[in-house]
Image 1 (cartoon, rainbow, N blue to C red):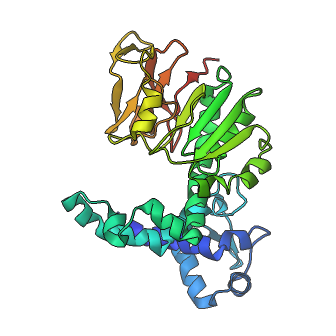
Image 2 (image 1 turned 180 degrees about the vertical axis):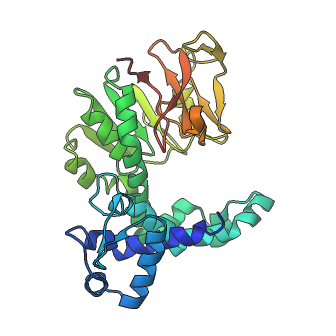
Length: 327
């Protein structure tokens, strides 16, 4: 396991060189591949051997290199591409944070402040080039969550869906596209949402999704029938989100019945992260082992009446709540 960091950097290098894109039209010999990606043939051959040993790419009997199922996901145009995430993991600006992990555990101090003297968000403002890499990675993460969420949940009861901290809107675009009659509001930092229009147009929902710039640390848009929140509901969930999630008099407050008749607390700790059953409509949780040893993620599901239940979701990166499909 300790060598996993080396493998990750090899994958990142493949994404940065766009090797999978170069092989999209068919197998190539190493000289032709090196010429296409702008690399030294001998060094590239070493990288390809390392990747092939991990099951990424393949070498044919005639010596040419080709894509396989894993390598396909490194193509920038693949529907479930992880190329953006691979570039983010391999970026020095991200990688150097991990060198201070032990110090962060000792002191409890956030690494960006110790390393750069500012928050990670402020650093992204100062480095738009790295912000582009970060936003592409977040879009990749949302892409992985789209199919299982759309298959599992029915958002039809909610006319207006608000995605708080929704990045460029990949998940919200999928939800709105799958929910005729629904409209969306994408809320994130101004410099983030200003880059969302191209994605929204590409998915055909630009006329149904509005954008609003702001920080969920300060406020959250009101008026939504369904609030989607991903990756921010931990033990320090910003008060602005909690005010929306835990509205006074909310039927979901306190303890709510589960579908099986048992009762669960309002703050259900899923994998160490509290997920508020009173209204949050997507909460990321740490993976845990489900039946058969399969890693699954808990979901807080809230009905229109405010009752909550907990059930696993196949989503690899996010946990929606809302009304589950039963048919």
